[in-house]
Amino acid sequence: MSDETPICSAKGCRDAAVWVLAWNNPKLHTPERRKTWLACDEHREHLSQFLGVRGFLKDVVLLSEWEQPEGSA
Image 1: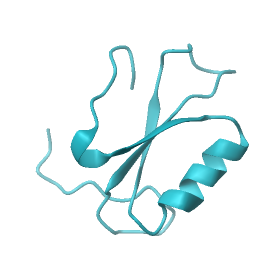
Image 2: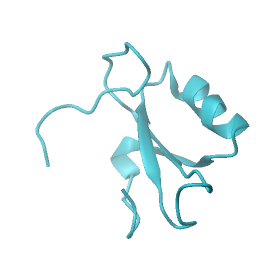
Image 3: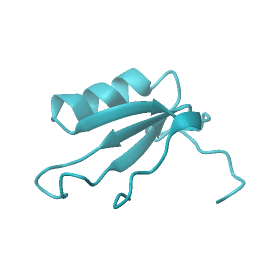
C-alpha cells in the first residue's frame, strides 16, 4: 500500500479523501464487483448523486472503515 494520502476523485479536487463510494455498472460488471471513487466531505454528496441517479451507487463508507470485497477492483 502506498504512503500517499488518498485524494478525492472529484475533478480538480486535491483534498484528502474521507469517503469511499462503491459502485457497479450492471451493463459492464458482474453483480458482486465494486468499483470505487474516493470523496472528501465537500464532494461526497455530489459524487453520490451522480452515481445514484444512474443506479450505480451501492454503498458509501468511511475510508477508515472500508474493506475491499473479494472479487472487486
